[in-house]
Image 1 (cartoon, rainbow, N blue to C red):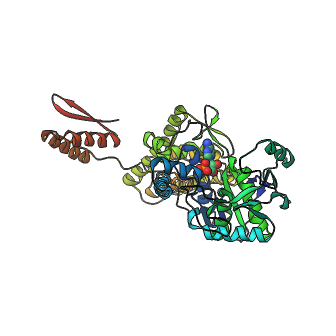
Image 2: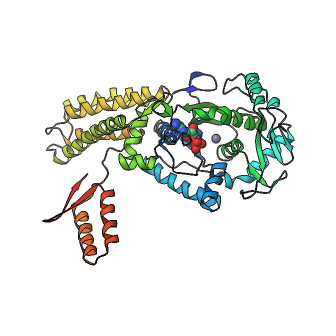
Image 3: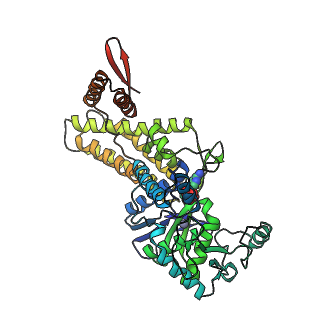
Length: 468
Ligand code: AMP
Ligand code: ZN
C-alpha cells in the first residue's frame, strides 16, 4: 500500500513498525454540538482505511479521541446554565449515534481528554524537566526554539510565522519567550472546569491531549496519524514537538490529511454558519448515502456538497442495492444448485474487478476508483446472472459484491421497510386518540409516521396514507 505522507510530501510504500500490526490515531471532534458533514469526512475516510487494512490482514489498533474540555464546550455550558460535562456527555452520545448511522465502527478505544489529565500532567512535567517547557505564573508553554525540527510537518517558513505572530498582541501572551510557543497548561478562569497541577488549578491545552492519549493507547511510536488538513498546523506540528521532545524517537511514520468538504466552494464550518449536520442529512437521505457521497472523491481532493450531488449519489448507491436485491431473488428462485463449468469460468472474470478495487485502495486509498470497480461488478451481475443461473453462481457474485462494498462500509441491503401492518396499527391508535379528543397524541402519531416516511391524509372515506 502507498500513502501520501504530509511529512515527506511523497507517496510512500507502507511499512508497519511491527509486522502484521497497524497503530492508527485519528483526531476526533470537539463535542459541543451535533457534528456536521465536514466533521464526518475524516471519520468516514479513516474508518474505510481501517476496514481495508483489516481486510489486508493487519491487526488494526484504531484510537480516536473526543475533545471534551474546550472553550466552545464551556461557552455552550454557560449558555445552558449546566456543567460542561453535561454538554460533552450529551454530544459524545449523539456523535456515536451519527457514527452508527454512517456505519463507522467504534474505535478500539475512544479516549476522553478529561479522563486522562494525570497523563497530561506527567508529560508536561517531563517536558519541563527536559527543558522543553516553562512555567510563567501558572501557565506552561512549550519552548518551540528548543525543538530543532519544529515546522517539519507543515513545511512552513518559521521566521515568517514568527514575525507575523509578533504583530498580533494577544493579551496575556507577552509572557511567552517566542511567538510560536504554545500552551500546555493554563490556569482556570471563573466558572471553568479545572484540575489541580504543580503549576496552577487549571486545564490542559488542546495539543497535549492527543500526544498523551496516543502514547497511552498506542505507544511512543505509531504508524498512521490522521485528521483534516486544517490540523496540520499548528495542532499536528505541536503534537510532534511534544511527543518527540519527550520520547526522542519519531512519533508517527505516516501523516494523512483529508481535504475539506465545501459548500459553494467555501469550507463548511460552524463559524461560517454554512454547515449541515449529519443528523439532518441522514434524515433527508441516509447515513449510507452520505458515506457513499464522501467516498466518491479521493480523500485529498476537495469535495463540494450540493443537493444535486446528493441526489446522484443516492441514485448511484441505489443501482448497487437493486443489483444485490436481484441477486438475492435469483438465489431464492434458482433451479440448479451447483456451478456449471461455464459459470466457473465466468466467475473467474470477477477477479479483475477485485484486482482493480485493491489497486485503487493500495494507491493512497483511491475510493473513487474502488467504487468504479464495484460498478463494473454490478454491471457483470446484471448481465451474467440470469434466471437460468445456478444458486452457487448468484451467491458467489453476491458474496463478492458484499465483500467489496463492506470494505467501504456500504451495506448492500436496504433498511428494513416499515410494514403496512405497523402503519395500520399506528393509524388506529391515532383515530382512537382523536375520538378521545387527545389531539396532542394524535398529532404526535402523525409526526411519528411522517418520520417513518408515511404521510396521512384525512378524507371523507377515512384516513389514507402514502409513502413520501
Ligand atoms: P473539530 O471538531 O473542529 O476539531 O473537527 C474534527 C475533525 O473534523 C478534524 O479532523 C477536522 O479537520 C475535521 N473537519 C472539520 N471541518 C471539516 C470540513 N469542512 N471538511 C473536512 N474535514 C473537516
Ligand atoms: Zn489531535
